[in-house]
Amino acid sequence: MKRGIIIVAYWLAAIIFTASILMSLDYDIGHAAIMSLSFLPAAMALSFFLPKVEKTQEKKERVLGAIFIILGVMTMTFFFIYLWQLLFAFVIDGASETRWDMPSMLWNPVFVAAVLALLAYGHFHLLKWLDKKYPTDGPITFYSVYKKISLKREDILYIESRDSEVWIYARDGQQYRNRTGISQWEDVLGSGFVRIHRSYLVNRTYASVSSPECVCVAGKELPVSRKYKDEVFRMRRSNY
Image (cartoon, rainbow, N blue to C red; front, side):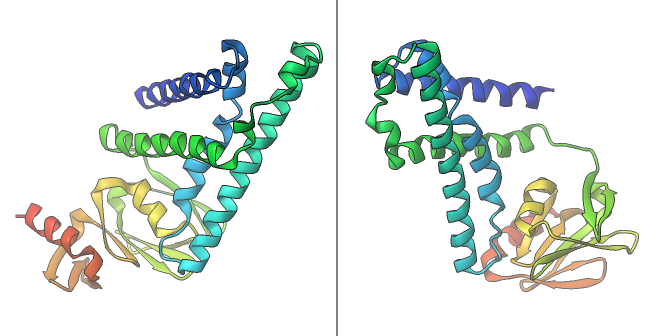
């Protein structure tokens, strides 16, 4: 409940913030408030989809994925801007030429991208803060080979990334395949899990550091990469 209220409050603040910028472009308060709604769907989409560009993919694939997402949200924003401007010109203001003369800044992709990035960046970090402040204790639901699976966080031992799939290893010995990227699993599972390698995400409860290069989970030795050694070292200290 608190999470929902905070998120709604953020987007209301985002509307006020965007409207204040538009008022500086010679919109009155009513038109500015309506026009600010042009940015919200795209900013929400950007904050949702951009973090899902899987970090374990090749650099070229990540860049292309990010470009497609950015182009998509920019196109969405310009569509809504044009739509609202038509509404102002031909419905609300009775074909007013003044209202049809849209400020040049709203056709500037750099300006539009900057506003979207600011709103999306704030929302993304708000969600990360909320995950820590109000962690979700419910089961994780996902699909494995077209079958809906629900697992409690404490029943997941570790996640392994294998090319375009991840494998979820459960305490009861079951293994599940899923196409959600390991970085997205890291966000979903939260602070109870630690990334030890580009291909491995382990449950802190069942992980023990057997050497600087390995972590043991349920008898399985998993490699630790140089990038994540500091995190593994902090995990080892916290276990003492």
